[in-house]
Length: 462
Image (cartoon, rainbow, N blue to C red; front, side):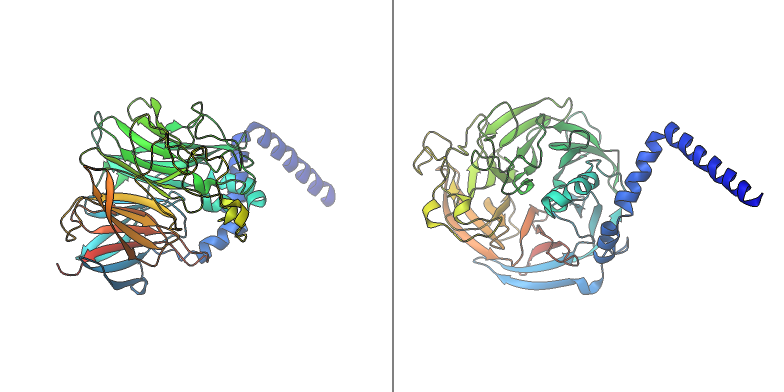
Protein backbone atom coordinates (compact mmCIF):
# COMPACT_ATOMS: atom_id res chain seq x y z
CA UNK A 1 0.00 0.00 0.00
CA UNK A 2 2.84 2.37 0.91
CA UNK A 3 4.59 1.77 -2.45
CA UNK A 4 1.35 2.37 -4.35
CA UNK A 5 0.85 5.70 -2.54
CA UNK A 6 4.38 6.81 -3.41
CA UNK A 7 3.83 5.83 -7.05
CA UNK A 8 0.54 7.79 -7.21
CA UNK A 9 2.19 10.90 -5.71
CA UNK A 10 5.09 10.58 -8.18
CA UNK A 11 2.68 10.21 -11.11
CA UNK A 12 0.62 13.24 -10.03
CA UNK A 13 3.85 15.29 -9.71
CA UNK A 14 4.91 14.34 -13.23
CA UNK A 15 1.48 15.19 -14.68
CA UNK A 16 1.40 18.51 -12.82
CA UNK A 17 4.90 19.38 -14.12
CA UNK A 18 3.84 18.60 -17.68
CA UNK A 19 0.74 20.79 -17.38
CA UNK A 20 2.69 23.64 -15.76
CA UNK A 21 5.40 23.44 -18.45
CA UNK A 22 2.78 23.53 -21.22
CA UNK A 23 1.02 26.55 -19.70
CA UNK A 24 4.22 28.52 -18.86
CA UNK A 25 6.56 28.32 -21.86
CA UNK A 26 8.18 31.71 -21.15
CA UNK A 27 9.04 30.77 -17.56
CA UNK A 28 10.57 27.52 -18.77
CA UNK A 29 12.64 29.40 -21.34
CA UNK A 30 13.88 31.85 -18.69
CA UNK A 31 14.75 28.98 -16.33
CA UNK A 32 16.70 27.24 -19.10
CA UNK A 33 18.62 30.44 -19.81
CA UNK A 34 19.51 30.85 -16.13
CA UNK A 35 20.76 27.25 -15.93
CA UNK A 36 22.67 27.58 -19.21
CA UNK A 37 24.23 31.00 -18.81
CA UNK A 38 24.04 32.36 -15.27
CA UNK A 39 24.88 29.06 -13.56
CA UNK A 40 27.18 27.59 -16.20
CA UNK A 41 30.59 26.24 -15.11
CA UNK A 42 32.26 28.69 -17.52
CA UNK A 43 30.53 31.73 -16.02
CA UNK A 44 31.09 30.66 -12.43
CA UNK A 45 34.78 30.03 -13.17
CA UNK A 46 35.11 33.39 -14.92
CA UNK A 47 33.47 35.23 -12.01
CA UNK A 48 35.75 33.53 -9.50
CA UNK A 49 38.88 34.39 -11.48
CA UNK A 50 38.02 37.89 -12.69
CA UNK A 51 39.25 39.79 -9.62
CA UNK A 52 35.94 41.54 -9.03
CA UNK A 53 36.08 44.22 -6.38
CA UNK A 54 33.41 45.49 -4.04
CA UNK A 55 31.14 48.39 -4.93
CA UNK A 56 33.19 50.97 -3.11
CA UNK A 57 36.80 51.00 -4.28
CA UNK A 58 39.66 49.17 -5.91
CA UNK A 59 42.43 47.75 -3.78
CA UNK A 60 45.22 50.22 -3.18
CA UNK A 61 47.96 47.83 -4.36
CA UNK A 62 46.35 47.77 -7.80
CA UNK A 63 47.15 51.47 -8.29
CA UNK A 64 50.59 52.50 -9.51
CA UNK A 65 52.32 55.39 -11.26
CA UNK A 66 55.20 55.89 -13.68
CA UNK A 67 56.80 58.92 -15.32
CA UNK A 68 57.16 59.46 -19.07
CA UNK A 69 59.43 62.00 -20.69
CA UNK A 70 58.10 63.41 -24.00
CA UNK A 71 59.36 66.11 -26.36
CA UNK A 72 57.58 68.95 -24.58
CA UNK A 73 56.09 67.54 -21.38
CA UNK A 74 56.98 65.45 -18.34
CA UNK A 75 54.00 63.14 -17.83
CA UNK A 76 52.81 61.16 -14.81
CA UNK A 77 50.89 58.04 -15.79
CA UNK A 78 48.55 56.62 -13.10
CA UNK A 79 47.11 53.11 -13.55
CA UNK A 80 43.74 51.98 -12.19
CA UNK A 81 42.75 48.34 -12.67
CA UNK A 82 39.21 47.91 -13.96
CA UNK A 83 36.97 45.82 -11.64
CA UNK A 84 35.88 43.30 -14.31
CA UNK A 85 37.60 41.08 -16.87
CA UNK A 86 36.03 42.37 -20.06
CA UNK A 87 37.10 43.27 -23.60
CA UNK A 88 36.27 46.47 -25.49
CA UNK A 89 33.73 48.80 -23.85
CA UNK A 90 34.27 52.55 -23.64
CA UNK A 91 35.18 55.49 -21.42
CA UNK A 92 34.10 59.14 -21.23
CA UNK A 93 33.68 61.99 -18.73
CA UNK A 94 30.56 62.61 -16.64
CA UNK A 95 30.75 65.65 -14.36
CA UNK A 96 34.24 65.28 -12.86
CA UNK A 97 34.18 61.48 -12.99
CA UNK A 98 35.26 58.91 -15.56
CA UNK A 99 32.45 56.70 -16.82
CA UNK A 100 33.34 53.15 -17.88
CA UNK A 101 30.92 50.78 -19.61
CA UNK A 102 32.45 47.34 -20.01
CA UNK A 103 32.10 45.17 -23.08
CA UNK A 104 29.62 43.12 -21.05
CA UNK A 105 27.52 46.20 -20.14
CA UNK A 106 28.73 46.62 -16.54
CA UNK A 107 28.72 50.28 -15.54
CA UNK A 108 31.29 51.96 -13.26
CA UNK A 109 32.34 55.46 -12.24
CA UNK A 110 36.00 56.16 -11.53
CA UNK A 111 35.71 59.02 -9.05
CA UNK A 112 38.43 61.43 -7.94
CA UNK A 113 38.27 61.46 -4.14
CA UNK A 114 41.20 63.88 -3.93
CA UNK A 115 43.67 65.23 -6.50
CA UNK A 116 44.99 62.35 -8.63
CA UNK A 117 43.44 59.74 -6.34
CA UNK A 118 40.58 57.86 -8.00
CA UNK A 119 38.33 55.04 -6.81
CA UNK A 120 35.87 52.83 -8.69
CA UNK A 121 32.18 52.78 -7.84
CA UNK A 122 29.84 50.15 -9.28
CA UNK A 123 26.63 51.62 -10.74
CA UNK A 124 23.44 49.62 -10.43
CA UNK A 125 21.81 50.12 -13.81
CA UNK A 126 19.89 48.28 -16.54
CA UNK A 127 22.02 46.25 -18.95
CA UNK A 128 21.87 46.31 -22.73
CA UNK A 129 19.89 43.32 -23.99
CA UNK A 130 22.17 42.32 -26.87
CA UNK A 131 21.84 38.55 -26.22
CA UNK A 132 25.60 38.13 -25.81
CA UNK A 133 25.35 35.17 -23.42
CA UNK A 134 23.11 33.28 -25.85
CA UNK A 135 25.43 34.05 -28.78
CA UNK A 136 28.44 32.77 -26.83
CA UNK A 137 26.61 29.62 -25.77
CA UNK A 138 25.48 28.86 -29.33
CA UNK A 139 28.74 29.69 -31.09
CA UNK A 140 31.68 29.20 -28.74
CA UNK A 141 32.30 25.65 -29.94
CA UNK A 142 32.43 26.91 -33.54
CA UNK A 143 34.59 30.03 -33.20
CA UNK A 144 36.37 29.52 -29.88
CA UNK A 145 37.02 32.50 -27.59
CA UNK A 146 36.26 34.92 -30.45
CA UNK A 147 32.60 34.58 -29.43
CA UNK A 148 33.10 35.98 -25.93
CA UNK A 149 36.00 38.25 -26.80
CA UNK A 150 34.61 40.17 -29.77
CA UNK A 151 30.85 40.23 -29.12
CA UNK A 152 29.73 43.17 -26.99
CA UNK A 153 29.90 46.92 -26.39
CA UNK A 154 32.34 48.75 -28.69
CA UNK A 155 32.04 52.42 -27.66
CA UNK A 156 30.06 54.98 -25.64
CA UNK A 157 29.15 58.66 -25.94
CA UNK A 158 27.64 61.10 -23.42
CA UNK A 159 26.32 64.44 -24.66
CA UNK A 160 23.34 66.83 -24.79
CA UNK A 161 20.96 66.85 -27.74
CA UNK A 162 18.08 69.02 -28.85
CA UNK A 163 14.68 67.83 -27.66
CA UNK A 164 15.99 65.98 -24.59
CA UNK A 165 15.90 67.45 -21.08
CA UNK A 166 18.75 65.28 -19.82
CA UNK A 167 22.08 64.23 -21.25
CA UNK A 168 22.06 61.03 -23.27
CA UNK A 169 24.33 58.00 -22.99
CA UNK A 170 24.84 56.04 -26.23
CA UNK A 171 26.47 52.64 -26.66
CA UNK A 172 27.29 50.71 -29.83
CA UNK A 173 27.11 46.94 -29.74
CA UNK A 174 26.74 43.75 -31.69
CA UNK A 175 23.25 42.22 -31.36
CA UNK A 176 22.30 38.56 -31.66
CA UNK A 177 19.16 37.34 -33.44
CA UNK A 178 18.69 33.95 -31.81
CA UNK A 179 15.86 32.76 -34.05
CA UNK A 180 17.90 33.37 -37.22
CA UNK A 181 21.28 32.61 -35.62
CA UNK A 182 22.86 35.79 -37.02
CA UNK A 183 24.00 39.16 -35.70
CA UNK A 184 23.64 42.83 -36.54
CA UNK A 185 25.29 46.02 -35.30
CA UNK A 186 23.27 48.51 -33.28
CA UNK A 187 23.20 51.69 -31.22
CA UNK A 188 21.42 51.98 -27.87
CA UNK A 189 20.35 55.12 -26.01
CA UNK A 190 19.49 55.87 -22.40
CA UNK A 191 18.79 59.15 -20.59
CA UNK A 192 20.86 60.14 -17.56
CA UNK A 193 18.05 61.00 -15.16
CA UNK A 194 20.36 61.92 -12.29
CA UNK A 195 24.04 62.61 -13.01
CA UNK A 196 25.00 62.92 -9.33
CA UNK A 197 24.16 59.32 -8.45
CA UNK A 198 24.25 58.32 -12.13
CA UNK A 199 20.73 57.00 -12.52
CA UNK A 200 19.76 56.06 -16.06
CA UNK A 201 16.57 55.00 -17.82
CA UNK A 202 16.03 51.71 -19.66
CA UNK A 203 18.16 51.24 -22.76
CA UNK A 204 16.40 51.81 -26.10
CA UNK A 205 17.62 50.59 -29.48
CA UNK A 206 17.66 53.45 -32.01
CA UNK A 207 19.57 51.82 -34.86
CA UNK A 208 20.37 48.37 -36.21
CA UNK A 209 21.95 47.29 -39.47
CA UNK A 210 19.38 45.60 -41.69
CA UNK A 211 21.67 42.91 -43.07
CA UNK A 212 22.08 40.13 -40.51
CA UNK A 213 25.50 38.44 -40.65
CA UNK A 214 26.40 34.85 -39.79
CA UNK A 215 29.63 33.55 -38.32
CA UNK A 216 30.33 32.01 -41.74
CA UNK A 217 30.40 35.38 -43.52
CA UNK A 218 34.18 34.90 -43.65
CA UNK A 219 36.31 31.78 -43.39
CA UNK A 220 39.64 33.06 -42.05
CA UNK A 221 38.66 33.87 -39.42
CA UNK A 222 35.04 32.96 -38.88
CA UNK A 223 33.20 35.69 -36.96
CA UNK A 224 35.66 38.52 -37.64
CA UNK A 225 34.08 41.01 -35.24
CA UNK A 226 37.50 42.48 -34.45
CA UNK A 227 36.76 44.39 -37.67
CA UNK A 228 33.46 45.83 -36.43
CA UNK A 229 34.40 49.50 -35.96
CA UNK A 230 31.74 51.00 -33.69
CA UNK A 231 32.87 54.52 -32.75
CA UNK A 232 30.21 57.15 -31.99
CA UNK A 233 30.50 60.95 -32.08
CA UNK A 234 28.01 63.81 -31.81
CA UNK A 235 27.66 65.24 -35.32
CA UNK A 236 25.22 68.06 -34.51
CA UNK A 237 22.28 68.81 -32.18
CA UNK A 238 20.13 66.13 -33.80
CA UNK A 239 22.55 63.49 -35.12
CA UNK A 240 25.31 61.11 -34.17
CA UNK A 241 27.87 59.58 -36.53
CA UNK A 242 28.64 55.87 -36.22
CA UNK A 243 31.53 53.95 -37.81
CA UNK A 244 30.88 50.35 -38.88
CA UNK A 245 33.59 47.98 -40.13
CA UNK A 246 33.40 45.40 -42.91
CA UNK A 247 33.74 42.38 -40.58
CA UNK A 248 36.58 41.21 -42.83
CA UNK A 249 34.17 40.78 -45.76
CA UNK A 250 36.51 42.37 -48.28
CA UNK A 251 36.13 40.43 -51.52
CA UNK A 252 39.02 38.13 -50.65
CA UNK A 253 38.00 36.61 -47.33
CA UNK A 254 34.26 36.95 -47.99
CA UNK A 255 31.83 39.06 -50.02
CA UNK A 256 32.87 42.70 -50.55
CA UNK A 257 30.58 44.89 -48.42
CA UNK A 258 32.25 48.30 -48.20
CA UNK A 259 31.53 49.47 -51.78
CA UNK A 260 28.00 48.04 -51.81
CA UNK A 261 25.57 50.83 -50.89
CA UNK A 262 22.71 48.39 -50.23
CA UNK A 263 24.23 47.53 -46.83
CA UNK A 264 25.73 49.58 -43.96
CA UNK A 265 28.97 47.69 -43.37
CA UNK A 266 32.24 49.46 -44.13
CA UNK A 267 30.44 52.80 -43.78
CA UNK A 268 29.98 55.88 -41.61
CA UNK A 269 26.28 56.17 -40.70
CA UNK A 270 24.48 59.40 -39.81
CA UNK A 271 21.68 58.70 -37.31
CA UNK A 272 18.92 61.04 -36.13
CA UNK A 273 18.60 60.60 -32.35
CA UNK A 274 14.96 61.77 -32.27
CA UNK A 275 13.36 59.60 -34.96
CA UNK A 276 16.13 57.07 -35.78
CA UNK A 277 16.27 58.04 -39.45
CA UNK A 278 19.67 57.16 -40.87
CA UNK A 279 21.76 57.44 -44.00
CA UNK A 280 25.20 56.50 -45.31
CA UNK A 281 27.58 59.41 -44.65
CA UNK A 282 30.73 57.97 -46.25
CA UNK A 283 31.81 54.55 -47.51
CA UNK A 284 34.78 52.46 -48.64
CA UNK A 285 35.97 51.86 -45.06
CA UNK A 286 37.60 48.71 -43.68
CA UNK A 287 37.64 48.95 -39.89
CA UNK A 288 37.31 52.55 -38.62
CA UNK A 289 38.47 52.19 -35.01
CA UNK A 290 38.70 55.91 -34.24
CA UNK A 291 36.39 58.89 -34.82
CA UNK A 292 36.54 62.50 -33.60
CA UNK A 293 34.96 65.84 -34.50
CA UNK A 294 36.77 68.99 -33.31
CA UNK A 295 35.34 72.36 -32.31
CA UNK A 296 35.47 73.53 -35.94
CA UNK A 297 33.54 70.47 -37.19
CA UNK A 298 36.57 68.79 -38.76
CA UNK A 299 36.02 65.03 -38.66
CA UNK A 300 39.01 62.68 -38.32
CA UNK A 301 39.01 58.91 -38.41
CA UNK A 302 41.63 56.25 -37.78
CA UNK A 303 41.23 52.99 -39.65
CA UNK A 304 42.77 49.54 -39.59
CA UNK A 305 44.12 48.66 -43.00
CA UNK A 306 45.42 45.31 -44.11
CA UNK A 307 49.09 44.65 -43.23
CA UNK A 308 51.14 47.88 -43.21
CA UNK A 309 48.16 49.99 -44.23
CA UNK A 310 46.60 51.66 -41.16
CA UNK A 311 45.18 55.08 -42.04
CA UNK A 312 44.39 58.53 -40.71
CA UNK A 313 41.48 59.98 -42.71
CA UNK A 314 39.73 63.33 -42.96
CA UNK A 315 36.03 62.48 -43.26
CA UNK A 316 33.71 64.37 -45.61
CA UNK A 317 30.14 63.47 -46.49
CA UNK A 318 29.61 61.27 -49.58
CA UNK A 319 33.33 60.51 -49.96
CA UNK A 320 34.48 57.05 -51.03
CA UNK A 321 37.65 56.05 -49.14
CA UNK A 322 38.46 53.20 -51.49
CA UNK A 323 38.42 49.95 -49.54
CA UNK A 324 38.80 47.24 -50.80
CA UNK A 325 39.74 48.71 -54.19
CA UNK A 326 42.45 51.04 -52.88
CA UNK A 327 44.93 50.72 -50.01
CA UNK A 328 48.59 51.34 -49.28
CA UNK A 329 48.64 48.08 -47.33
CA UNK A 330 49.32 44.52 -48.45
CA UNK A 331 47.48 41.22 -48.23
CA UNK A 332 46.97 40.01 -44.66
CA UNK A 333 48.03 36.57 -45.87
CA UNK A 334 51.52 37.94 -46.43
CA UNK A 335 51.77 38.38 -42.67
CA UNK A 336 48.63 36.87 -41.21
CA UNK A 337 47.54 38.73 -38.08
CA UNK A 338 45.02 36.06 -37.15
CA UNK A 339 46.76 32.72 -37.54
CA UNK A 340 50.36 33.97 -37.25
CA UNK A 341 51.58 32.22 -40.38
CA UNK A 342 54.97 33.16 -41.72
CA UNK A 343 54.98 35.82 -44.43
CA UNK A 344 54.69 34.65 -48.02
CA UNK A 345 56.92 36.95 -50.07
CA UNK A 346 54.89 36.27 -53.22
CA UNK A 347 51.72 37.74 -51.72
CA UNK A 348 52.91 41.17 -50.60
CA UNK A 349 50.18 42.92 -52.56
CA UNK A 350 46.52 43.50 -51.87
CA UNK A 351 44.93 41.61 -54.82
CA UNK A 352 41.93 43.93 -55.31
CA UNK A 353 43.88 47.20 -55.48
CA UNK A 354 42.93 48.84 -58.81
CA UNK A 355 45.03 51.96 -58.23
CA UNK A 356 48.53 50.45 -58.39
CA UNK A 357 49.24 51.66 -54.87
CA UNK A 358 48.30 55.27 -55.70
CA UNK A 359 44.82 55.56 -54.15
CA UNK A 360 43.84 57.69 -57.17
CA UNK A 361 40.12 58.26 -57.83
CA UNK A 362 39.32 57.77 -54.14
CA UNK A 363 39.61 59.97 -51.04
CA UNK A 364 43.22 59.57 -49.95
CA UNK A 365 44.30 59.18 -46.33
CA UNK A 366 46.05 62.09 -44.63
CA UNK A 367 48.62 59.57 -43.51
CA UNK A 368 49.18 55.83 -43.86
CA UNK A 369 51.58 53.76 -41.75
CA UNK A 370 54.05 51.42 -43.45
CA UNK A 371 54.81 49.67 -40.18
CA UNK A 372 52.49 47.75 -37.89
CA UNK A 373 50.91 49.97 -35.24
CA UNK A 374 47.40 48.52 -34.79
CA UNK A 375 45.62 51.87 -34.72
CA UNK A 376 42.69 52.45 -32.36
CA UNK A 377 40.99 55.73 -31.36
CA UNK A 378 41.81 59.41 -31.95
CA UNK A 379 41.21 62.80 -30.34
CA UNK A 380 42.07 66.35 -31.27
CA UNK A 381 43.66 67.77 -28.14
CA UNK A 382 41.99 71.15 -27.59
CA UNK A 383 43.59 72.37 -24.35
CA UNK A 384 46.76 74.13 -23.12
CA UNK A 385 47.26 71.80 -20.12
CA UNK A 386 50.04 69.92 -21.95
CA UNK A 387 52.51 72.44 -23.36
CA UNK A 388 52.52 72.76 -27.20
CA UNK A 389 49.92 70.03 -27.67
CA UNK A 390 46.92 72.28 -28.37
CA UNK A 391 45.15 71.31 -31.63
CA UNK A 392 47.43 68.28 -32.05
CA UNK A 393 46.03 64.89 -33.04
CA UNK A 394 46.56 62.23 -30.36
CA UNK A 395 46.17 58.68 -31.67
CA UNK A 396 46.10 55.53 -29.56
CA UNK A 397 47.42 52.18 -30.76
CA UNK A 398 47.11 48.51 -29.94
CA UNK A 399 49.98 46.54 -31.48
CA UNK A 400 52.65 49.21 -30.94
CA UNK A 401 51.55 50.04 -27.36
CA UNK A 402 51.94 53.78 -27.82
CA UNK A 403 50.34 57.15 -28.36
CA UNK A 404 51.15 59.03 -31.55
CA UNK A 405 51.06 62.82 -31.41
CA UNK A 406 50.72 64.60 -34.76
CA UNK A 407 50.89 68.27 -35.65
CA UNK A 408 48.30 68.79 -38.41
CA UNK A 409 48.45 71.75 -40.80
CA UNK A 410 44.74 72.54 -41.28
CA UNK A 411 45.42 74.94 -44.16
CA UNK A 412 47.49 72.49 -46.20
CA UNK A 413 45.70 69.38 -44.89
CA UNK A 414 48.98 67.69 -44.09
CA UNK A 415 50.93 66.17 -41.20
CA UNK A 416 54.10 68.16 -40.42
CA UNK A 417 55.32 66.55 -37.17
CA UNK A 418 54.96 63.17 -35.45
CA UNK A 419 56.01 61.96 -32.00
CA UNK A 420 55.68 58.42 -30.68
CA UNK A 421 54.99 58.20 -26.93
CA UNK A 422 55.57 54.73 -25.50
CA UNK A 423 52.89 53.60 -23.03
CA UNK A 424 53.60 49.88 -22.92
CA UNK A 425 49.95 48.80 -23.10
CA UNK A 426 47.43 47.98 -25.84
CA UNK A 427 45.25 51.10 -25.81
CA UNK A 428 41.61 50.63 -26.80
CA UNK A 429 40.09 54.09 -26.08
CA UNK A 430 41.14 57.67 -25.35
CA UNK A 431 39.54 60.98 -24.34
CA UNK A 432 40.63 64.30 -22.85
CA UNK A 433 39.03 65.55 -19.64
CA UNK A 434 37.79 69.12 -19.36
CA UNK A 435 40.83 70.06 -17.26
CA UNK A 436 43.24 68.74 -19.94
CA UNK A 437 44.30 65.42 -18.48
CA UNK A 438 44.14 62.50 -20.91
CA UNK A 439 42.45 59.19 -20.09
CA UNK A 440 43.17 55.83 -21.74
CA UNK A 441 41.45 52.43 -21.61
CA UNK A 442 43.67 49.40 -22.18
CA UNK A 443 42.82 45.93 -23.45
CA UNK A 444 42.46 43.06 -21.02
CA UNK A 445 45.23 40.47 -20.96
CA UNK A 446 45.09 36.84 -22.03
CA UNK A 447 44.91 35.54 -18.45
CA UNK A 448 41.63 35.81 -16.54
CA UNK A 449 43.24 37.93 -13.81
CA UNK A 450 44.67 40.49 -16.26
CA UNK A 451 41.85 43.00 -16.21
CA UNK A 452 41.81 46.12 -18.40
CA UNK A 453 43.18 49.32 -16.91
CA UNK A 454 42.25 52.98 -17.02
CA UNK A 455 45.33 55.17 -17.34
CA UNK A 456 45.33 58.89 -16.49
CA UNK A 457 48.03 61.17 -17.96
CA UNK A 458 48.77 64.32 -15.97
CA UNK A 459 51.40 67.05 -16.30
CA UNK A 460 54.20 66.62 -13.76
CA UNK A 461 55.18 70.29 -14.04
CA UNK A 462 51.79 71.67 -12.98
